[in-house]
Length: 98
Length: 373
Image (cartoon, rainbow over all chains, first blue to last red; front, side):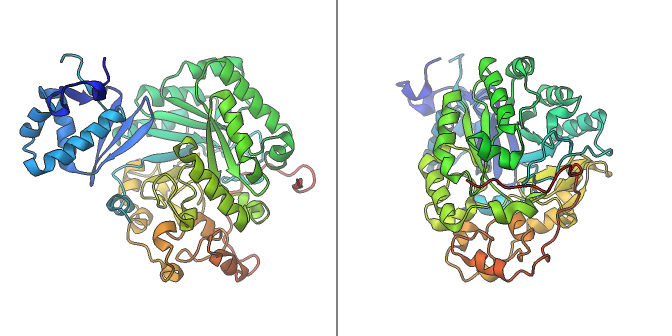
């Protein structure tokens, strides 16, 4: 699978999903994500971001997931950066079916 | 203080980092052992009780446990418990002195997924290491590392407790880790367990604290620390990691008989939250024990309130203060501002609380001798 960051397609137009060896655990501030492969722990510090991450796999693109989760326009740039960070740390990956 | 740190201080729904000491039995008798290990406690959790606890941890979505002891591999059901954890999606990181890692065990470990191994070594040579960990322990640890490397385990960890006798060896430790393709983990010496009696002799000097800080800062995420040096953040730029005491908030300890303490370094009645054999088990202790709820309340900065560095160092380590007889709302005994040394000078000899539960084996020869380098 090509590295998502090298793809010419904009992130919002890509089909994404939580990486298979990543577990999400709900917490009062959002969620903890743990990658059993890299042993990396990431704090998702916003409940809407958690909903978004959970919705990725069932939506055709990140942009569609924004809509499905009713994420306000003004927050989308920040959330897109957060998702890019999760892609970078291998917590989220591009879906093979895309 | 970041918003996240504030949230973490209020506690999580389950620990991030849970230490589970499987046994107090140990083939070694390290002079700084934080659990005063040596002899097995007959009340140890049975295999079935251990597995029931793993089930509970899985339900709480604890991602991994740090298994230790004592020497955990002494338990005959060690692999039973490890395999049960891994099969249930609870990752295992275990600490060992390496005595029981022969070629066959190394191959078995290498074949297990979700498993990290950490070999303890407190000196770059036998003289420095064995003075603290006992005669022959250096050779034992190195042999285990050789077996793991040969079995293709991958990046195991070499874990070093930094003392005033090995501070100068940090670069050599990094080289040793690199030569094995291993990861170096450096943690702080606590005055816990048998360490209560040896801390004053072994803990790094104030000048060495600075040396440790700059060394860790230079190595960044390359070297693991278990977030144990946040008291050094008063020196400037923060070290990587969560800058807080996680006791009862994001970490805790389950001891071999199921007693739950706020952290691995405070085995004392004052920090005992309950026992996993109690009704409601571990989950109830984590979410509702009075001790843990108190620790999640805002803590007083006390004597440190007027210090400009308090936000950076958070007053340091609760265990280090407690077992050196210092008030919990005052400076850490290793406060880089020098306030800890002053405070220590005011502690009456013999007045510091004693660690609970001495499992040390009977002393066969003369008391411990420190080799000086």
